[in-house]
Image (tube, rainbow over all chains, first blue to last red; front, side, top):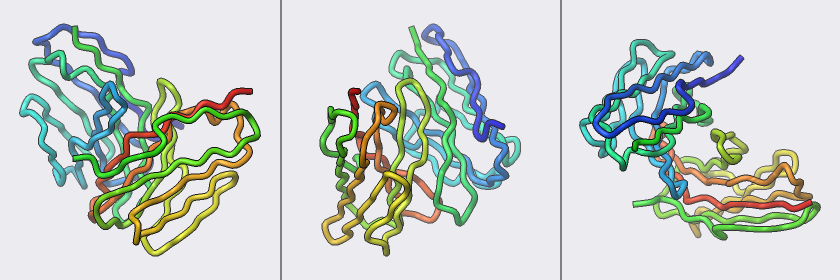
Length: 112
Length: 111
């Protein structure tokens, strides 16, 4: 009965590779987010989608491309991975008009 | 730039004691939320306080909000070892629910 689930939980990959992180929510929400948590635990929003439409796009390199095939899914694809991309990536979701945002367990990305 | 700052950065207490952490922010907010993150885990929503509210309670948690001072506090009463975690305040300032986080307070509760 996981609410917001992300895969994979851990990912170790080499510089230059392309990787994807997938997110699914079964809460019936229409808004989904990607957040990045750096090594100092600072959390910052990257993207947000509402009903499959991009509504928030923070200053993120073009190598990061989110894709929302439907309201319940928001995937994050990263091209040409760099060492600085190593972080924990959190997916989150909410319903429009509601304030509480629910987070997934995170995906730990390590670029070597 | 970071919207929220938390104080203290770290807090070490014994079981049974109260833990208080503070959050200050820079701009007007719609609401302020507190999250807990256990080591290696995701963020768990604890409590939300709206900009027109001054105090809220949920179990052993008490949150205050002072919009004139742009600050909030989270009090955990009668702490337990299981309360050991990082606590984050997060503010929403727009209608899309974009959260802007503080840097977090790391709380360690020793038995």
